[in-house]
Length: 269
Image (cartoon, rainbow, N blue to C red):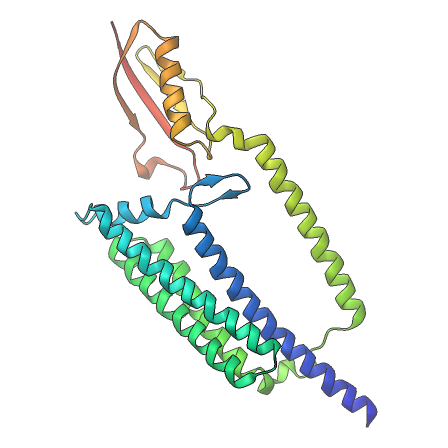
């Protein structure tokens, strides 16, 4: 009888851990999404995506290039993501307090906002023709729905009946997490130490033909690198006039992560 009680206790602890994992996952997910939009671009220890430029480019493809339209779309997006984050944080707080009714209500609102957000994203992906993002957001939509099903029915799912974490497993997992975190932290700081300078570093132009030059920027390069590279090119080539600057068309690029490559066409002064 005593062993049976211990197993039941371990089972409850195991199912609680699953709920904690689900809550922490969505909290981190939406927190990083909000931070990404708040920061944007490449910064020390964080490389985000310029969502404003991305959204404005999308609307511009439909003939709606007014920046206020992109601003409104981003405000709606950040609002949905922030409210989802708040409700998941509230669910975690009430779950830690063992207030299950409040936990269920807060978690339901968080999942509802998550599904609404990914539906909103998916409609936009379809309108703008971004099928890769549509696949990604569609998968997250189903992950959100699955999270809700597991969270409310975990006590009735038999595969979790004997799920528990022993002391040795907990210690081993903690050591592994600390090791992974340490390696990741070191790699981030090392990457910033060795590569972040590329954000503003001048890039040399390479001569392709008699009147054509190529400048290949690294991934982190920003507007300062572009401007300083053009200025250096003018200084290094005083007998050349720049007639126009162009880049490779999108279909010829290997992927979105590639750095910008520009070509400079010149003529003799």
